[in-house]
Image 1 (cartoon, rainbow, N blue to C red):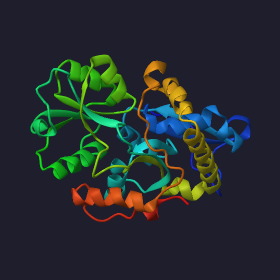
Image 2 (cartoon, one colour):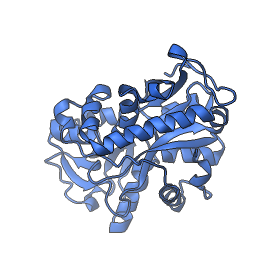
Image 3 (cartoon, helix red, strand yellow):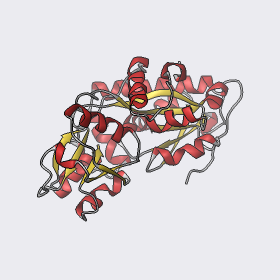
Length: 304
């Protein structure tokens, strides 16, 4: 699925790309999480920093993990923190966090049911089939915490990629879906699906969801390249903060969301800088729910 087009460099440089720029190969999901990545590419921010960033789409960040481990790609954008922190704890992958992608914001990820569903409250979900993109990951992690706060039972999670959730709900293969933008809005629009609960609500409001993940080996050999990448992403986030319409204009260029749908999508938080305390909050929640067997301090994994 992923083609190796670059290798780890030496002394702070990665492989040479177009017009002598340093090549960085990034796997990315067709999610709103990657908006800053595409803004940086389309606005020439990477080129300004001397980078030739090549983007390869995947449907789940888990799919990119083997390629990252083998050095076939340099980084995963919109990488689900839960997957990669678990890989780090197990010794599968020596990860480094290059930048944050998004944090949760109101209504940017929601649990949806058919309009005529008998499921009227969160409590009605107990034992029902709920679609998530990947099992035992950030969606179930955060939603289980919401359920625990309300004192109600859990659903039965089913793994269905985001692009297929609408069809699965429409065909009755699942009772509900936990969708993130832009799929959240498109499922509501196309199926007249009803919002059951905001998946970004207390006690998981503003929690970090995804980031730009690389490996210790790549980071150690490409410090200058990564610093340039961070500057470009930070500049793109600044653009997104100052003018959210840029995000809405960019989404249809790399996702299936239409220009009309993009106008009303609920945007997440695009952090301009990494926050060790917020990332620790996520890691602590993972440990609490048994997704990590021992403590992990994200501050030690951040590329500064």
